[in-house]
Structures are given as C-alpha cells and as structure tokens.
Amino acid sequence: MTANGGVWRNWARTESVRPKRVERPTSAAAVQRAVAAAGRSALPIKAVGAGHSFTGIAVAPGVQLDLTDLAGVISVDEATHRVTLAAGTHLYQLPRLLAPYGLALANMGDIDRQTISGATSTGTHGTGSAWGGLATQIVAMTLVVGDGSLLHVSETENSELLPAVRLGLGALGIIVDLTIQCVPAYLLQAVEAAEPLGDILDTFQERSLASDHFEFYWFPHTETALTKTNTRLPIDAQRAPLGRLSRFVDDEVMANGLYRVTCALGTVVPPLIPGFSRMAEKLSGRREFTDVSPRVFVTNRTVRFREMEYALPREVIPDVLREVKALIHRRGWRISFPIEVRSAAADDVWMSTANGRETGYIAVHRYYREDQTEYFRDIEAIMRSHNGRPHWGKMHTQDADALRGSYPHFDDFIAVRDRLDPDRRFANPYLERVLGR
Image (cartoon, rainbow, N blue to C red; front, side, top):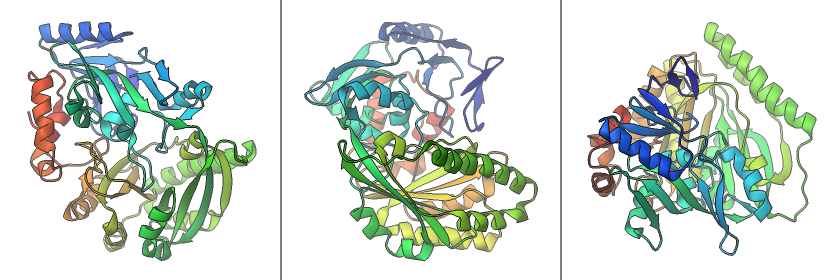
C-alpha cells in the first residue's frame, strides 16, 4: 500500500483510489466516532490493511480507515492458548508478539505482510489437508457495525454470527480486535525438491493427505515442479536452520534478484521465457532445513506480480492442472511465473473458499508489467467449469449471481449483512459486484 498525493494504491498496482478523507483511529471508540461521522456525511467507510489484496476489496472512495495504530496484543489466555489482537496487527509482527507466551499460529500462508484483520477477512490460507485458513482460527471478534455500535461475537455471545464474521469480506463492519486460537510453538522440518510434474500429479492426493503441509510450484514450459513438504515437530526438537549465506543466496539473490531480471527481460522479449524456465528447472535442487514455523512457512517476495487463485474440490486438482498445462501450450503463451498448488481442510465458515468440501488451490500469476487479461480469463473458464471458487482477495470476474450457486450459505451471509449494515456504509464497487447491493 502506498499513498502519493492522496492516492492510495494496492501492492500489485491493480487498484487505486483517492479517498475523500483518511482517518487513523487508535481505539475502538475512535472507530465508532469515524463510522458515526461517515454516516452523518453519507459517505461509505472502509478499513484498509496492508493493501495486499489484488482485488478492489479494500478500496475506500469515501472514508478510508488506516488501522496502523490499532495494533498489538490486547490479552492472552495462557491456559487456552487464545490471544486477542488489535485489528491492525501485521502477521510479520506475530512471531515477536507470541514468543513470550510460547505460542504460534496453527498454520500460515507464505506471505506475512498483511494485517490479521485483512488476511482473515479475505480468506488467506496456507497449505495442509488437515488445516483450515486463517479465519478458522478465530474464536471471537469485536467490530463496529453500521449504526456505530460495538458488536462482540464469540462462542458464547452472538454465536450465531461467528460463521459469518470470521470471514466477513469487510462487508459486515470494521473489525477492531480478534481472538485467535493459537497453538504451542513448533518447528517445521522442510524438504524442498525438484520432481517430475507427472509423478507429482499422479500422487497429489496421497501426498497431500500423508504430509502435514504439502505444496508445489510448476514453471510452465518445463516438466518439473518444485515440491515443498513441511513436517511439524515439537519446539524442543533439534533445529537445523538455513545459514545466513544460504538463505541470502537462495531466497534473495536467486528467488528475487535474478528472477526480477528474468521477468523484466521476458516482458521485452517473451520468447526468452521458456529458456529461463528450463534454466530454473536445472538449477532447482534439494534443500532441507528445520526451523521455527514462521521462518519456514513465510517466504520473502519482492518481485511484484498479479494473481488469480481458485479453490476446487481437491480430487480434481491433477486433472485441472493438466487442462491448464495443455491450454498454455495450445495458446503459445510465454509465462514466466510459476503456478502454485496447495490444499486445505473443509470448514464451516460461510464465505470460506473451503466451506463444506476438502479443497485444493491453483494459483496463477503474471509479472505486474505484463497484461494478464487473456491468461487469467481463459484459465478462469476452466476453473469455473469445475465448480471453482475464486479467492476473495485475488483477481477474478465473478459476480453475485454466479457466486450464489457456489456457496450454500451465500444468502445467510447476505441476511447478516442486512442486519449489521442495512445502509451499506461498508460497501464499495467490489462488494457490490460480488455480493449485490
């Protein structure tokens, strides 16, 4: 997220807006005052986190609430491992904040730049067939709803709303704090290896179920993918972290520095891309290390890109990726960014992409200086033909009419929206498209 001359832009440079005003509340009461004032001015109001959504879900044309100063640990219940966090707390701050209590998140994605409220509200997830997305870890929440009042939701208070507010898309109110069910801190033993794509697809189901956290990245124009298998270990197991030099060379020089040059050259001369991909295929080797969970889950990514990700029934993932591979070959596209494949457990969160079904994810990317339109459009058609659900924070073209058929509790969610925000104070063009007015 950047601000330049009053213009807000998201990280991917896919969305921008000039808010009529920006407010930076430091307390729940300040959020209440901001919502009340916006109502009196007949202005929509939205909170913005780190700007890491690729869609316009956080675009605030009226009043933009910057929650940077509403951050940190509010309370910790050490007996139950539950931690209440202010909404503007960034994920990258959590290892330091949770360390004194010996706690960690049960699962994480591979980017930690988001705020906890933004990540949960958009359906951020990691990988692991026994693990849900970040929103499934929420056990309580406080938000300011449309009339400016504070609403507390938990397992014992307004509990009927919990399946809705856990992943509320920013449509139900302004979150001021969340209580997360954490777990005792743990290590991850990571094994990264280049393997034949065909073998991975043939065994994807078995490997997803047998591993704590399994994912892979496939570079188009090659027959090899990079697998990542993480095994959970107790915190007192032996650590074998990557050395500083190894991490710097692999993750900064190769994964970011050299890759940035590759993408830039590929934009100017697309025929170079398959050769670069085959070079990356040859350079990918085996790597093993063991470290505390955040240092294994999270990867530093500095090359700017755009992304579309679809959630699918897990059993169709291999066949769908084969269709995508055939499409890329048939169209003659030159794709420099890898395709990422992950999985997640079924959950009961109404607007979760994994609601009610064991889920696999396929994410496609393009360098931000390239035109992603045709690539994303045609792959989206494949995803939709397999009952795919788009990630709320990543690019897609679906609207409320199409999405209603994909979510069994879509209308239940809309009913909660009507109850908490009848005047649509928290609406914006993106929410009008995916939820209706």
